[in-house]
Length: 120
Image 1 (tube, rainbow, N blue to C red):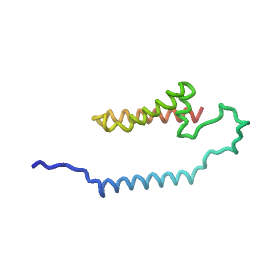
Image 2: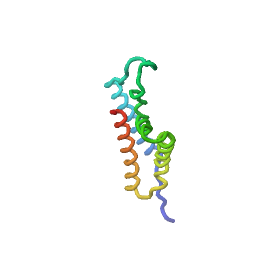
Image 3: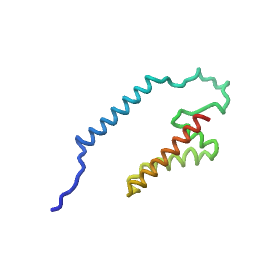
């Protein structure tokens, strides 16, 4: 009878995931204590021009694409397709290299749109 290779999930995988969770939380706490949030004064809906209004940093890339593309494409279709592709990536791609290229491609596009919108 052939030997079946199995992946041990408990405690090996759970321990690695717990270490990653604690590392990410500790880095986030450290960064949040060292740097202040770039907050301005209280909001005044009558005094702020529309060009100066920015979304929270996580949505700045979507807001930047909304300036140039139709709302259904930039606000709904493109983010939905990016999330769908990232979720289906392990099932669609059999070669690890191609999966990494697609993943980092989406990551670079999202980060560059966010930086472009944040610095604009």
